[in-house]
Length: 88
Image 1 (cartoon, rainbow, N blue to C red):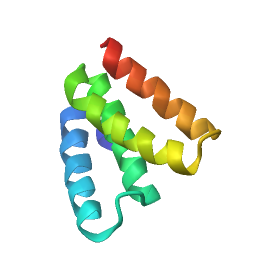
Image 2: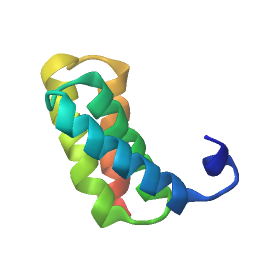
Image 3: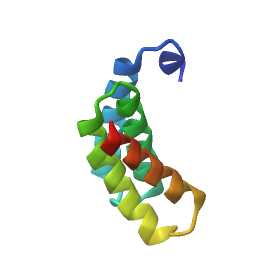
Image 4: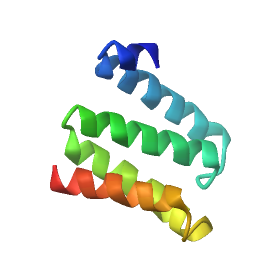
């Protein structure tokens, strides 16, 4: 959070990618921690205008959210992030 507030988005991206890698090694693909990290990383990439990299992450998070929380605000929020990545 401190790096992000300082505008060091690339540093945050590296940390999120490493965190996601470690989560994927130890948790099932639909674990909420993985979904949260996918969404956070996709938002970071959108902020850096790395839309092509953000899109598959947002899409992966959305697939899980639609399966488990179809009418939840988090699903709608993830749809919005996917839209931002696609419109980039």
